[in-house]
Length: 286
Image (cartoon, rainbow, N blue to C red; front, side):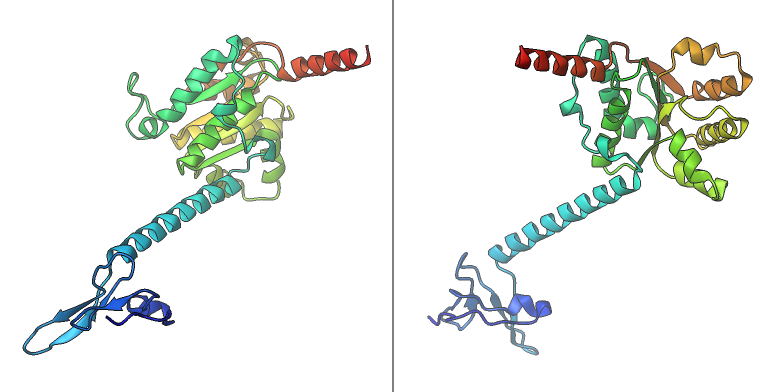
């Protein structure tokens, strides 16, 4: 049998006709793969158009399938990265994952709710919650500063973006900075284009009439678009529900029309870590 002595370079569009080292011809003069032994050529015995045609062997089929899977994976990773780049998320939250969640007694309820919310998100926005049949339900994580509310929301965001679901995570402080000098309707339309809008640190924005009106417009537009949102705040539930200022009351009332309050109580992680570092220093210098 004739054996191909070397690789014969061909144009990419003619890759199927490339002869590789180890390929050989059978007794009929047809090329076979030197690896799997399957035919790379077939003879068409037509009385009108007798000819030899090239075909794909098992090795090449496997190679093409692996290449297709690799390209699909790379495209998926690129799409996820584009989602993350468009998410407006602060860099410190981009690695937040449930697998890194520091569970303790005070945040167990929030942790369970967040995981279920993430797992049921696609069904919830299309068919409604299996138990309540409500669609597009949001969450409000509230509690003292430093208890992990923002991290919890970021875990949801990152898990959903891994599922190729669009998420924007920002704050009203950032929104008020960005919206100045822009077309407000277009900017809010951009926020509403995502499947989930997360707004961090509600209540930290300025309490001017202008600022509170913009906050209300963002919330109201999201509710009218019938899309879910998640908010985090250091405010207590009573501070939100019993605020005597009508400007705040109309904002909070609109939020709780579509969002479920979830408390994350406890001591600040930052204070606990600071105390641990202080203890380490004392032990070191003692």
